[in-house]
Image (cartoon, rainbow, N blue to C red; front, top):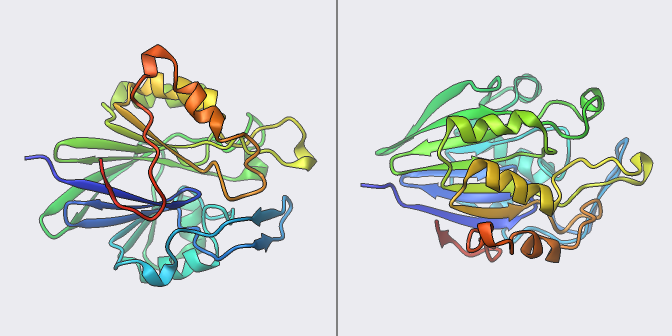
Length: 254
């Protein structure tokens, strides 16, 4: 029997997943808005999350694509990490975070169990910008989550590159959560640091995903692409019916 799965979109790249008995949170960015984050590339949040940290249930597992940017891990998100049962992330982030954090190298897998539910989580390739920007952007990871009856893919912040093609070769993806937004910064000109809608559509084709949930496309100034582009990119005949927009704050069965 397939394990029931629900997803609650909280905003940015933050999703609350319930996979059978396991409660999972992705990239917790939960601060109230407006909020500014000074850095080499300053970030500004313009809308808050649908739920605050205080509204969340106990979290068994956090899937953290990276820890170095506030739109994936902010102040409130760090508080959530401190009380989560387990955190899976990059090896570099795990070393910085300590506590319950475990770092996974690309294609490394671990099993996680809560109650009667066991999932296998595999780290997948991701690159947070054009080739050559890795020393500045830092390491990032995606995740595949396999459970009885299905498979989820969470892209993490990534741009389109050849290493992503292997994900579709290794796994049969049911639902893909793709970080979009076509992130740009004034200081870096035309360089993009996340997928555009068109690139997300191309990745969906490569993955062969049954449905695609867009994330990471609103509520921050550096997400420069009009969200309407997402529906346009997925209107192609071969992608018809695959796009799944989740209403913020409401659990939806996948």
